[in-house]
Image 1 (spheres, rainbow, N blue to C red):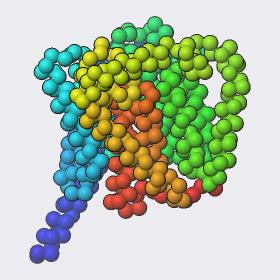
Image 2 (image 1 turned 90 degrees about the vertical axis):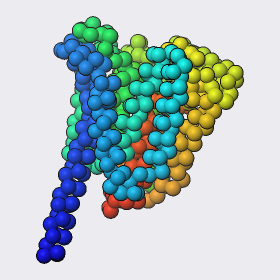
Image 3 (image 1 turned 120 degrees about the vertical axis):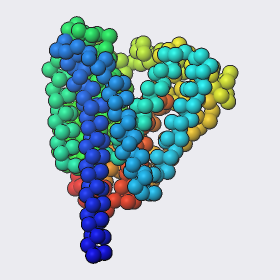
Image 4 (image 1 turned 180 degrees about the horizontal axis):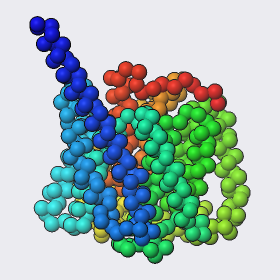
Length: 417
């Protein structure tokens, strides 16, 4: 009798665990598709005038809706097992709590409300995206199929609706709510993050090359220079990781760069209004000059307030587009903590795993996301950019799955190429 009761209890627990895991998986995957491909498709419909902005700009509202189910599964997962809460989880949420306290104190003190609101929403975005990348198994066949289909559909939209080699739906003038229409950077963010996940799942060189041949021109036409540079930056990382003949890969990439440089005039003639071409002469790029000015402004603020910084001491939107924004708003402690939180995982990834013969998709996703995040923190993004959450979430996911989940992540045999 006791044995029967034990068996029934075991089956009940197993059924509950299975239902929990299915719900968690479905929620995490849905969150990704809603926040990234979903944002792209919603904004496309707005730009074409097919529908009104019934969800405003979309991202904020959807993030608020997703916050509670994502937190529920994250906290429930922690409750189910001690080892489910990793050190990276602790360090990341400690940072978010610290930043939230700083924001709240300055709200009470009467700081610029637009900056307060923007940064509070950024905290929500970071929490959502960290949990999503931390808990999603991107290796599922269903997820992979939908992600590839989303990437190809986004690529098709960019190519089909481009005008004179540029994709910017605002220029069509068809939107019924132009104030809610995203800039090219919003489209590029959704595209690049979807591409990074898809490319990390592909261990066949020919398929990766095909994806590069689609993604590079798509982001070029999109005109978001930051995301375009990130794509060009991550290609040699991916191919060097997979290849046994790393010098040959680097030589091939160098030759491709030389070819593009030699044919710059051709691109300038055929895409005269494309902002990406300004990279050839950054002195002519207005946004680059503005960012240099904002960096100088941040350095002056840090010089005058080296310990605590000077929260919201700039006009709304005129923050430093690099990691110095952490020092300005969150003081020397926030800056040092952020540097440590970014650099430690990045160095561990390259030192401990990059040159191993066995290849891991989860490792590669974490590696390229952390690499792109650090690149952006040095050159173009504010400290509260969502790439930080994606990179650290992917790193925590890789470390957790490597340690705790049997046969996961799926290790791949070393490629032939």
